[in-house]
Each structure stands twice: as structure tokens, then as C-alpha cells.
Image (cartoon, rainbow, N blue to C red; front, side, top):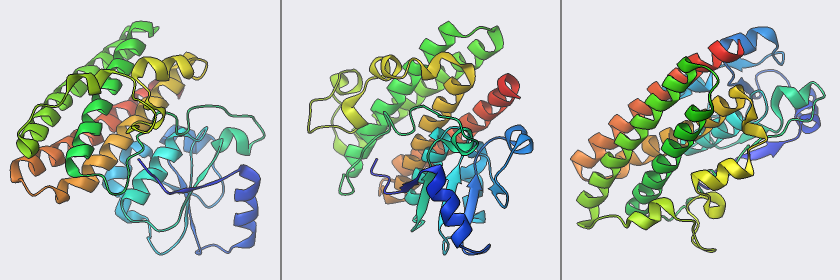
Length: 275
């Protein structure tokens, strides 16, 4: 999607914090509780990404928001969600805590996230969301096969099953809105240049190949899942009230609630494998 949030390198963020007084901005830490307890940037407000959908109203809209996480991925997703909820000024601190402390963090801070034009129709949004659910399901299935312990594998497989259910709901909504079936090739094929509802037109397989070094760590796999779940939540929260058909609107609202539950499940998994 077109997120329109800004980015800060760590040195830029530090300069910003030094030149502004407390109360002029919100420094938002979207990591999990155990990460926050180990280290935090002084003055940060703590709302885990897994809870942000339910707690977004706790963040003031009349101040700039600077979001950070471990390596920049989860905070990029949080920044997109905040922009989708009409927060006017949002920054993502690139590299997160790892870079803040002097490391050289790498990771898919935005790669593969949907790039949806501002003038996209509701039908286009549903089609993109459907493709996104297909790709997320494939991502979970592939990572479940590589998981080193059975509990992690079971969680990822369960999430993959939910994404398949979501895809089917979205196909129903698309049919209700257009009177047509969504072209199945759109859900699985790479996209041509100039027609890119996913950034770069990435399929799940292409995303995993491009970011394989980042995905070698279980924590990074979960973080990536949280990025995409948050993107889905953002879509459903923003567009549920724009659909005139009540049945479709109710399904989108139900999808949003399920994405919140998925984020909480991933947050629990992240604590287990990383805490």
C-alpha cells in the first residue's frame, strides 16, 4: 500500500529527539514485553504490534509518532497502520534497536508489502487482499516445514489454515461486489511491470528467495509474519466502513478481528522462541 510514512536513520532520530522536548512527539516501541524489558529507548511509549490494532486510540494524533522495533520491520508495519488510521506525521526508525545500539540491521522493512494506489476501488482492494492472504498462507506453510520444533510448526500451520479461510471469505466478498469470480491467476502469478498491487509483484516464493538470509532465524520469521498480518489488519480496518454491502462489511470486520488474534498468537510465539 502507499504508506506515506517517513523514515529516520538512527542518527536522524537521535537528533530529532535531542532537538524536541518531551510531549512534542510520541516515541513508540512496538516490540513485545520481554524485548522492552531488556532494553528501551528512554521515554518510549510501549504498545506491542500484536496489540496495536486494539490500542491505536491510546496514541495522540496531534503529535509526530516515531516508531521502532528490533530491526525496523514491525515498526514499518506499525507506521503503515497508523497512516491508515489518519495519523498525519509518522516516522519509522530504520534498523530499530539493533542499529540504534550500533549494529547493522538488515531485513525486509517494506519488501513485499502491498502498494495500493490511493484511488483504488473497493473491488481492487479486495482483490489485492485476497492475493495477500494466498501469499501469507504459502509463507506460513513453507516456514512450518523448516521449523525446528513441533510447537512452532503447529502454530505456523494453523495460521496457514486461517489464511486459506480468509481467502475464501474475500472471494465471496469480491463476487458479491462485482457479480464475477476473481481470476485465479492473479492470486499466484508474478505481476507485470506497471501492474503491481504487491511491491515488486512478489509471490510468496519470490519474497522468501529474496529475503532468505533474513529468514534463517526463527525470530525473523515471526517478525515477518507480523508485518504481513498488520498489513492485512490495516486493509480490513480502513475499508470495512467503505463497503456499502452490509454482508461484505461484516465479513471485513470479522477479518480484522481475526487478524488481531493472529498478531497476538504471533506475539506469544515470538516471546517463546526469543524471550
